[in-house]
Length: 360
Image (tube, rainbow, N blue to C red):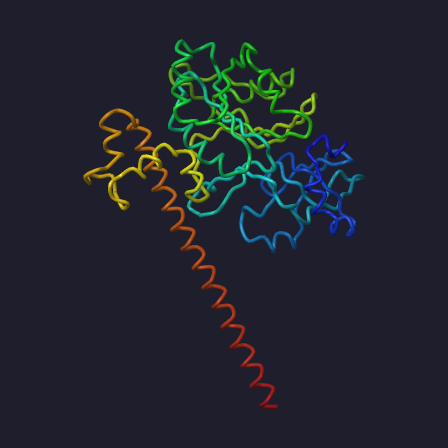
């Protein structure tokens, strides 16, 4: 297997010199299964696990390999296995807050050039969810592209496209019917040699059908969904990197109906720059937009120039980010306190040993 066929470039080569001198080889993570991984390299596909040192040195979940990552590994081709010793610096990465109560970053897909944000044009169509995906995609360093799937089920396509255009400033919007294989050629523009694209969307939007259409055969299992609400069980149960016959690279992900923000407010402002621009027109710089005179936000809402649902979603995401930042700060304070306590204990042990030594 040629490394360039799976995305290797001068960017990653520039970080690999020291690892190569140690006898390690570059591989790309194609699957992640809890503590084990499937990696691709010049000698094919191997089953891999991380080294004990790697596990000990990792500070958070975000430090562990993710699908799309390039890693330095020691292979055992005769056994079909390998050990991962390091993850190369990521060129980009789509991340979210990990599920559960722990405040940690989870890398959904790494080293991607394009993020396909897939939405169904059936009951799944949800502009507020699209806004959330846009906000997160701007954080990752890849270019977002919105895919509106199931045109065969949509009677008001133009209206839906116009609605998305009002929230997706400057982002390409592609309408397709994966079931009928209409419009798939438009996606191939983003899937050229060495280019990696990740598919993101909730369960039932048709990601697997799209991937099957691009591959030209039924690789991904497709399940029927309920007609009354367009919901269904996840077809994809784990993230996977797939190499297309024509040279592009796909990363498929399980459906994510709820996806939490992770990064700071900068990219949220980019997603809602129309609201940010309005806020600058308020009479008072510290306007809370809750009744002050000269509030441009309130005026736009009353005149129908600003969608109330979009405004509410903006506030919801702002609160989510502030809560997340508070959790991050608390976690960092606890980490620093643990480090301080550790140093204090070490100091007292050293003093104790010194007293013993002097006593002899």
